[in-house]
Length: 103
Image 1 (spheres, rainbow, N blue to C red):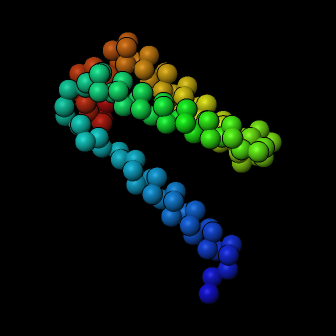
Image 2 (tube, helix red, strand yellow; image 1 turned 60 degrees about the vertical axis):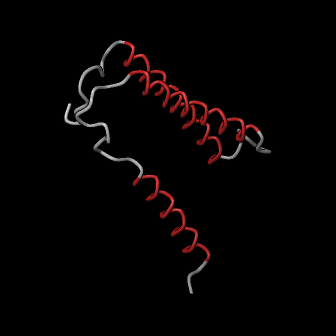
């Protein structure tokens, strides 16, 4: 029988592996024309999900005290900045053309 610590570690590893499997190096859009509208729409959905996560974070009893929870907010902030930068690059035309993962 596994100890609680081993059980928890296995559950965490399973969850992290699940996140890794959703990240693919090859896009399902590989070889197709980049669609700015579709990308902005998807980024807006992700941004809204980050805002919802931030609201849940604010409802914690010690939202900015516990190390793990504080790191969560740091990652939410970095993800939001990353989306803003990605949108700027899209607007600048950096991704226009045919999608090629080797570029």
